[in-house]
Image 1 (spheres, rainbow, N blue to C red):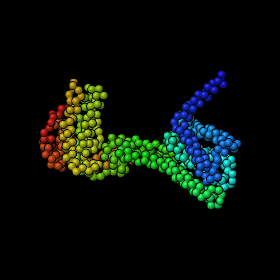
Image 2 (image 1 turned 120 degrees about the vertical axis):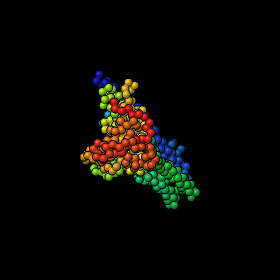
Image 3 (image 1 turned 90 degrees about the vertical axis):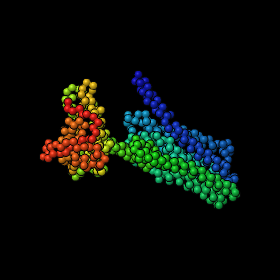
Image 4 (image 1 turned 30 degrees about the vertical axis):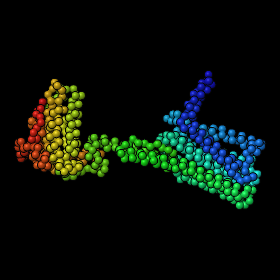
Length: 529
């Protein structure tokens, strides 16, 4: 029973492995490498039979009828099977890791294997070409000169096949590389580089074909070839054509491997510049370009986190204060500023809390503060703080305002018009009243507190004066009052909309203060409840 259970468990573990082997890019990866090798072999046979000068050409028919070809054909079949098996063996840890990367105990090994597998398989096929080339030269070459020519031809075909297969596998396995680079550090002991990729492309597409041309030319000049000069020239032209075609294919693949990630990064950069931080790029490989893509993703993630911090920070202290703190840093202290202060407070909210459920009170306060924030923001003010059921707004700090008093007065008038429509607890209760007070003057604006906990605020007589005026405004029919000094500092258009209504001595001040109200109040304040 234990043996059957073990076999069943093994079969169960093999099934997902086989299923993973025939999904994703693996079949196309192995097929592409085999096609590249077959194309290289076709080039070798075609050149040696049709393009080698005269009697020196390889006679395929004679080779097929001789006993020499059987070992070579057996080697070709064996290498095709073995190379495919080796490719599957190299990819096995990656396939298992892709099935369930969280449970894979050798995830780091699988990740490194995924990034190195194109080079590893290219070396495997290079070894196959070397061994096969030696066997082929030994079976076909009749002279030393022809052996050299055959060996060079095999080198051209093999090098081109391995390079094209390598570049093709890099392109096909990009999704695998992206998954591998996304789960850990991209560092490798011997990472591939763009420079080595270009050097390999140059060796394959230029150096090897030129070496073939030099070998054929040297053989013709030294009399190693029996053909006449026209036949030799035909062979050289064929090699030149192979050079052009091979260099085009290799250069095209190499250029695509470099240009594709750059184009992707450019597109992602444009999206980031437009404010879209949800733009991770797919990582292609472990070269400098892949590391650049990984670094870009980390940078965008950091920018998104910074933007989130800015947004959350701005919700607590105001966007202007948050922007200034992030750009200039935070330090204790303040600066002298001329500002206008707007104070708004509800009337009777404490009494209302004894009559209404807490959820309704919270909803009422949230709606009240929503309107206050909207109006203050529209007039370029700073909602400095919430004080229970009151709010303090500042105009002229931290950013200077050309008409701070005019903006504060305009905001007060708009609040006086909008608040009556939102401060109604329900049909069975009286509406909630409010008071709005505006004052202006010099203050100290800055950060106060401790080094590890501070807040931005304004300190000065206008703050106290605005609070005192607010208490009087609660009994004012329009619900809004402002100091005459604040009105005098506003631009004429806004000042003309306010009228001096009384002169009172505010609590804590030894002299009378003239107070102004909006010229045409649009509602009757509810008064205290």
